[in-house]
Image (cartoon, rainbow, N blue to C red; front, side, top):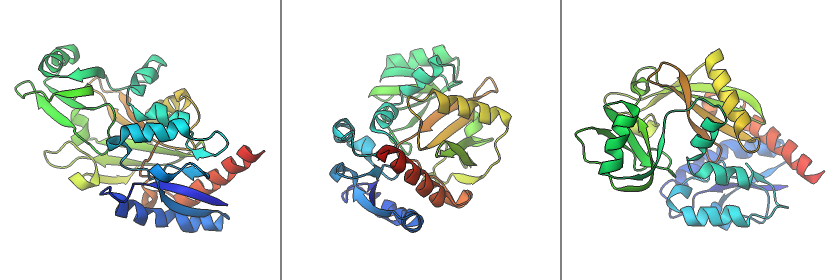
Length: 279
């Protein structure tokens, strides 16, 4: 059976990197009897697919949402279109908080000087992070002090800056086929606060403790539909407790070199899901 792995359109700067990363999965899927084929995500929708490498959707939001909305119910998509639509806008954090999941305090709305000034007082902190509600890879992300001019950013999210990002770091737990797979620790370097490798962030394997597992499992359980694959990011809040900062069910890098047989686990999960869909 042919299965698409959705990749950025050729015009996207990340297209070559996504195509290279897709090679890591093609062999594992072939061993499971699946013909995995990279395909630009705007062209998909006529055969089973996984959106694991659908990078760049946040800069083509209308096109992305249209793809999810028109996805045929008879064509499997991993993760499900409804789950990914929910996951596209980070207002899902407010829903998870209402469901009892510990989250990073977040204000949602249009960012301007007035709303950002109010947020400093609301959170009782001297530094904030402001970014779009639809973003990836620290896209349009700002770290502000009270003395800084606020960006004019519609549909933004504002959070207290958490110093743990530069010391303890951020933790990512990965679940594939509903089961915990592996975890990593990501730490920003120097004066930067971004943990992605392109900004110098360093990631290492990590064994999650009971607190991290409890928060991650609560977030996993509260999602509207079980993800076939997901990355759950945690960080320590100012009150000293671990909390959810992101649940990525669209196109997370699975950091396959830090886990055991990750492409094979994903291939097995997709195989089971295709069988369930056919039955």
